[in-house]
Length: 304
Length: 293
Image (cartoon, rainbow over all chains, first blue to last red; front, top):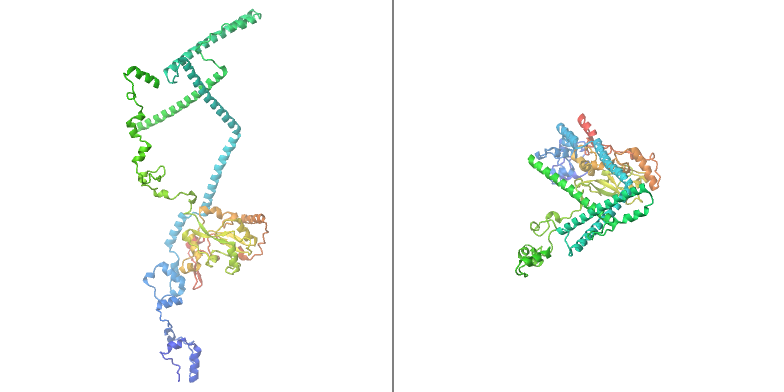
């Protein structure tokens, strides 16, 4: 004696039954019209609570993927409303205008992009400029290198000559100093310091002796020339006399004068003189620079 | 002169002894106090501490201020070959072998263009834009095994072999640059669409990288396509294979992205809703010009 009306108590169980069973039940007992719950769009259907899981409402809706009924005040920020729209779509009722930036924000964004991000053309220009600057430097160096390579053999030879001369000059210096020290020792009888006054005294004596020698040699040379001219005028017969007369005015050998190893000594002394002159030149240049610096400093101080 | 001085003393002094003679400076007590001996120093100094154990900081550092140890800045050694590490870009490696494997296991469809989001949807690569990671790079491993034509888009390629291996099978390779903002959209596309933001516009690469992405040898996306064709033939001659015809390929292989575009078929500025399955486009002129520039 089942009726078509559904008791409110039994709804819980009947909602889970399939629709066909309900229809058979009603058919088996009465001849009334078959209820069709599919076409039933009345309030009863929508009022029925289909949530049987005993979960709270919001959890149930989240589980099913439905948007929440009420949006809390905390969620009224733009980012959170956008996420709701993104997840649940049109059902939330949110206006999609929120998702884009506003007009003022758009203006700010465009200004920022213009300032902070360069355009492609500018970037390409910068890259080109850097590449060209590098290439320029390399080219400049290459030109210099090619220039200098032509002068290479010359420079190598010059360098070698300079080293040889320097060594020779050093050796000459040592030799000259040792010779002078030996001379002084022979002269005085005991070893003399080069700084001492006696060395200078001895050097002066030697210079005087050299000067007298040179004067005599010049006089002798003049005499020889005069003699030769006379003989030319007179005749060629007295060629033998020239040689004998050339020996006579030979100067007496000074015991104090050094025994010259003529050519080597001259070159040694010349090299020594060169070294001394170089060093004096350097010293003069250094002193000049020091003077200039000093004057510059004094000028600066005066200005202050 | 020492001999002269001695003779003078003999002349002028009454008695000449060792004690009467004036001493050289270095043997007086005054001088010895100011310049102590090595042994006296050792007897005065302590037997403990960093000074006695020869563990003082190196020359040039004040040992009193240093308190017996190196200053903090000098404890870490200086290795100038690490200079640009904080600003360097990182690319996660993906080899041709893994690509072939993914294709064989049907995790990637080679009939459609293979892109960053396609590779990230396999969940095998975790790219973090926060950590200066800018995408994926292709490596050499598996060049012999690779045998499928594929339209690949990758962020960095270091070797020619990889490019040759793809082009030998009839594939196409391009290198592309993505911003960190657009990377976060690509890496997890579903999450990005659920955020409800319009598709961002990709920036141009930094000045470091422009040379790379305008190079036809690396198949950059800003390079001249004519030069790229020349390079393809050059590679084919170098590695000894014949370039297959490009006209037989499907039209999907000719798909390329605009320099500002991130997703295939979607333009920047559009809003997409996965639930409603709709696309919304802005109509304002300002927005359109900005997003399409």
